Each structure stands twice: as C-alpha cells, then as structure tokens.
Image (cartoon, rainbow, N blue to C red; front, side, top):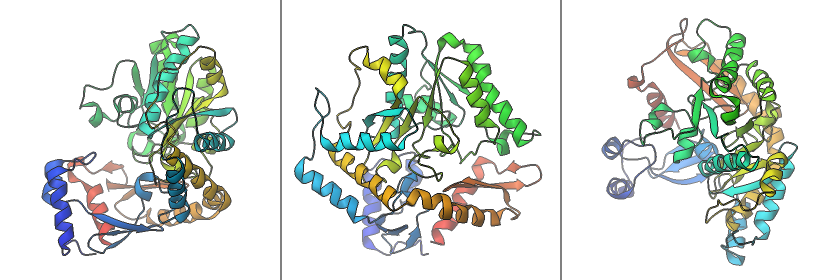
Length: 414
C-alpha cells in the first residue's frame, strides 16, 4: 500500500483537517504533521481511502458495523423515514411508530425481564442516563444515600463527564478533574497483565472478590450499582478468567445493589450471542447499548431497563431526563431494519457456528511468534499481546508505540 499523497484532494482534505477539524482522542500537533488518512468509500468489509488503497476494516468502523457497509436496506429505511417523518421528539407524551417498534424488538432479544428501553444518541449518553436513573431508583425506594457506582480500572463507559468517570482509564481522568464524586473503581480481571504468579482461575476469583471488598469498604447502604462490560473492549479485549463472572454473580446475589452490563461493544451478536450477558449467563438490571444497534449507519444508543427497576420508577412520577434526539425516528427506523437483517440472515447464529470459530482458530496460529505473549478472544473479539519477553510476560514500554507500529503495518498490508 502506498502512503504517499498523490491525489490533490487528499492534500486539500488534510489541510481542512489541520485548519478546522478537532478529531476525537487525538494529538492535534502530531495529526497536523502527519495528516489523517482520508476514508472515502466502503463496501462489505472493506474501506477505500482517498489514495485508492483498499483496506480490510478489522475494527468494523469502531466496533459497530455489524452487517457490513453498503446495505441498501438500511439506506432505504432511512430515506423512507426521512420522507414520512424526519424528526419529532418523544417528550410531552408523544411517540412515533419506529421508536415503539424498535423498543419492542429490543425487548424480544434482551434477557428475560428486560422489557423497557430509554433511547439516547450514543453509548456515552446511555451511561449518563444509567447514572441518573440508578440514583433516582434508590431515591424512589427511600434510600437516597445509595449513590456510589463501582466500575473497574481500565473499563470504558464513554467519554462524557459521567461516562469517563464510570470508566477507569487514568489518562482520561487526568483531564477535567475526573472522576466525579460518587464513583469508585476496583481492579480489572486482566490476568496476562496483572495476574502475576497466580493461575488464571485463582486470579479470576481474586479480581471478583475485589467487588465484595469494595462494597464492604464503602458500605452496602451507600452503593447503588456495579457497572462492567462483559468483555472489556477499548481497554484491550480483556477476556475475564472463567472463574470471574460466576464469582461476581455470587457476590451480587449477596448484596442489595444493581448490576449494569455495558453492552455497547458486546451487544448485537459480537460474542455469538445477542448480548454478552447471555454469553456469560449474567442477570443485569440495566444494559447500555449502542454501536451494533444501527450498525453505525446513524447514531443511536440506549439503556435497557429491567421490569424490577421500571416498576419502581413508574410509581414515582416524572423521570426528569432526556435528549432532543432520544428515539430519533430515522435512527429508530434504521435500527429496526438492522435488527431484521441480523435476525433473518442468521448473522448472530453464523458468528457462533462458523465465523467466530474460524477467526479464533486463525488468530491462535500467531501464538508461537516470539513477539506474541498471548492470543485471546471470544466471538468476533480478539487481542494479541506484543511482548519483549514471553516467559515473564514483559510488555513494551508505552513510549515505544508498538501498537501503532503494528497498526501501520496492517494498514500498509491492506
């Protein structure tokens, strides 16, 4: 693949980027010096940049393009809805058919007892909604002091103030005086990086026990919820040891706190089940969703709420929260059609039976490479640990940027 800029339009767009565009999670000086890769087209699982290079999109956009690029059914769903009802809000006791049909479709796919959906514009907004709803739930139950939400180190729950606080990424907390009050964190179940001399099984129990330790430290009477991704995505595809989730479930069963599963990445088939909670047999009270809900064709997120939580909220008047684009009719129409495609084409079942086993088998062929410390994965998630020393699991220092070097080679190979 040629990295040189031969197309005059590439230089033009890169100049516009430098002059006007603030990209997410970017070093603006570095980006200006290098210039962004300009993606101009996509079809199936491939991208094309402005220099004509064809690239296999292993990230599915940003963990979201579940049905692939170029699905005319989704384009037509959006166009049809735009012609009929391009926008109306869901405030003030109004609704529209797409949002109601989509809420029903999601409830049919979600774990038992998860029958209510609050729509947002993103997963980050979904987790903001979760924080407010969880605290409101406990206030409605006469326990307003139950405010603390426990997350995990290196977890990712979005980049809004609440989302970044709930997540445990220190480099995000360093900007903006985060986390906000009422958020606590426990260690992540990352055996390869933090398990030391423990076996994966022993480390899984240890990591899960940190939840109980934190509940007791803070006081059960002060803890509102525990939030976790079934599999940490942005934190490095952290697959918890097999002992982890069963022990977490035992702990959650002992204490009167809510469990929130952040399904933004795992949801809608990525694990070979509709939700990561189903893969691990988890019983969440709330589930954050986004990304695969619309395959990224239009922005949409949401919070799936259990009957248990809804019944308390319903009995206590207004829930004073919402967004202009909550349940946007075009996004809802696209989401509904996207779920139809996933169902009728058997994509989730195919992931479980064919695609994911193939991916995981081929990934593990790299395990004996001298630079590879571990290959791990579930479903369509996978991670390769690059190490200096396989025996000691010693990773490269962050300033070596080995991940970005590897990424560059992948782009150059298409």
